[in-house]
Image 1 (tube, rainbow, N blue to C red):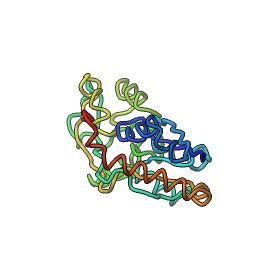
Image 2 (cartoon, rainbow, N blue to C red):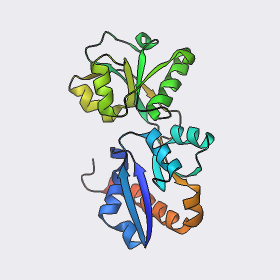
Image 3 (cartoon, rainbow, N blue to C red):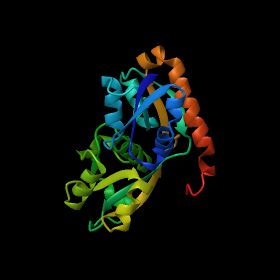
Image 4 (tube, rainbow, N blue to C red):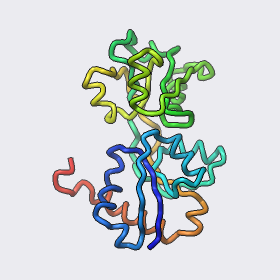
Length: 224
């Protein structure tokens, strides 16, 4: 039995992984796949790959590309979610901000530098023609940290996947003032090069199983 560690955010995109693990599909194929939830997001996942704390990661495309360019000894082996991620641009429900234009000089809550919330804030600023050298970031670590920061006026806006934040919007804690879709596929699977070199067959087995599951995902009764 080959043991592989994989990490990803605790979000709905990763349900197929949990289904495969619960159904022992990887185990039946000779792979003990150990999943770790990482609520801190992309920046933490990049760090875990660098530090050897995980072998694989289901990770935002923009985050891992940036980190590989900066020296992360990992490789993208597969596109996991082809469609773009819709990033909601959120403010505190009681704040005075009404539109995207109001946020040009706002303080941006991010989970950490190199995270999706950080990189997409830069993408959005460029799309709006703002001076990115003047962007001010506030590290909040998690979604709960962002709620605290926006509610208490520590930061002014926060970018996160709009469906993950919908319950917070519905509760009247956040207001979403705009959306910012990624201009690329949103999630990829990255593997540390050392692990890929030493375990190509096991990695291939994992990819084959998850691909089969995602292809059949919509056929699962009551999945929606």
